[in-house]
Image 1 (cartoon, rainbow, N blue to C red):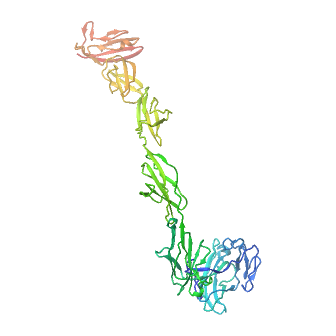
Image 2: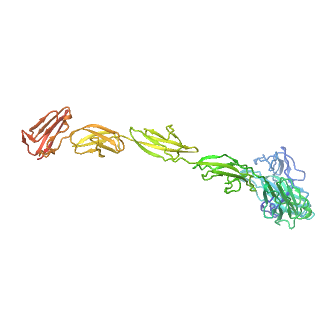
Length: 616
C-alpha cells in the first residue's frame, strides 16, 4: 500500500515524522489495547504514569473503552469494528517526560520500518475557557541497548478541536546490522494542567520498501479479460522505484481472493510469465533488499497488486417490448441489463452498422424497423453472445389546424375535425364521435383525433355574430337616423331591398316607413315601423314639381292633429284639422308674396310653433 508522506516539525530529533512513501509489508506488530468494558493496567515497565481505575488526573493514565471523563470528548476507540475496544488515555504529568515504552522484537537487520499510531486531543477547543494546553508528543525509536536513538520526531502542538478528530502519525527508521529488536518510546513535550489530555490507539510496525508496481509488456497494471478470449497468459514485470532499496530480491505470489496469498514456487526473478489462466487471479511480489529477508514477513514489503479479472459474457439485454408509436413520438427504445453493463445498438442481428454505443436507450429518428441491442460490460468490454431484437413501427400522425370561426345569431354551423387521416377516430368535447358536428352556441370546442398510437387535439373557437338591436330612430329635419345598442358591420334599408352602410337616410319625405337592419354577413333582418314627420323650413310654389307646397307629410297617420298658418301680422291664412295637410301659398285664391310665415301645429296635444319661408 502506498502512503502519502506527511511531515511535521521536530525539535532536534534525527528524523521527521513521515509515512512510508513506498510499499509496506504486512503489519509485524499491532497494539490495539484490547477490548472490554472494564479499565485495565498496562504491563509493568510500560509507563511511568500512575494507573487510574476511573478518571485519570494529571500524571495518571487508564486503558478504557470510553473517554467520558471531565469535560473531554466522549469517544470510542479508533480500531475499526472493535466492540468495546480500549484505548490508552493519558493525562499529562506536570513534568514533561516519557509516558510510554514498548520493546518490539523479531525485526530484521538492515531493514527500513514504519512506526505509526493514531492519536487524539481529548479536550475540546472550548475547554478551559478556550485556553487549553495543546498536546505535543515526541516519538522515539531506540536500539535494543537503549543507548542509541535510531529515529525521533515531534508532532508539534496539536490544539483542541470543536469535534473529536483522530489523526495518524508515523515515523521511519532503519535497523542496524545484527539488530532485531528496538524500543519504542513516547514522550510528552508539554506539561499537565488544564489540557494536554490525549488518547492513543492502533500502534503498528511494518516494513517499508520501494514503491513496486507490476506491469505487463504493454504497460497494463491490471487487465480485464473476456471469457471468450480465454485462455489468457501474460509476462509480468516488477518495477521498483529505488527510493529505499539499492538491491532487490523477489518472491512472486498469487491469490484467488486478493487476501490470502501463496508463494509461487521457484518464481524469484523480476519477471514472471503466468500460466494459461481461465479464472480471476491476483498477483503480487514480495521484495527485500537481502535475499535472506525476502520470505520473512517481518523484513519484506509487498508490491502493488496486479489483477487478472475474468469477465463473463453478459446476458443479452432484456427487451422492454416492441412498440407502435406516433411519428412525432420522441420516446426512445429501451432495454434492461445487469449492473456494470452497457448497451450497443445495431441494424442487424450479426455484424451490421453500429447505430449508437454505450446507451440503454436508442431513438431511431422515427424510422420504422427492427433494431438490435447488444450487451457490453463496462470492464473488459465483453459483449453478449447474441443481440436482442426490438421492433418499432411509426404511424402517421393526424394533421389538424385550430380554427376561429363565426356564425350568425339564431343559426347553426357545421364544424369539422378536418384531418388527413381517413381512418381516424374522433371524440369531441360535446361527446360526439363523428368527423363533423353541428353547433349553435358560441364557445370553444375541441376534438381528439386519433390514429391508433397518435392522438392530436384540435380546437375551434366559435364566435357569434350578433343581430343588430335597434336602440332608437329619430328624425332631424328630413333625415332619418337609426342607432343601435350594439355594434357590428350593419346594413340599413327603407325598402328591404336596397341597403346602405350609413345609418342616416338623407332627405326623406315624411311618412310611415319600415326600417330594415341586418348584419352584412348574415341574412336575418331586424325591422321596425317608424313615422317620419318633419316641418319643412321653406317651399317654392313655382310649379316646377319640387317643393311646390308646404306639405306636412305623415301628419295624417296621427289620430289627432291641427294645423294653423299665419302671416307675419298674425293673420290666419289656413286652418285644418285631422288628416293630411298641404298649403300652396295662396289666400282667397290669390298668390301670397315671398315672405316668412308662421305655423302652429298641435299633434295629439303636443304643440309645435315656428316659421318657414315661402320663396318665389
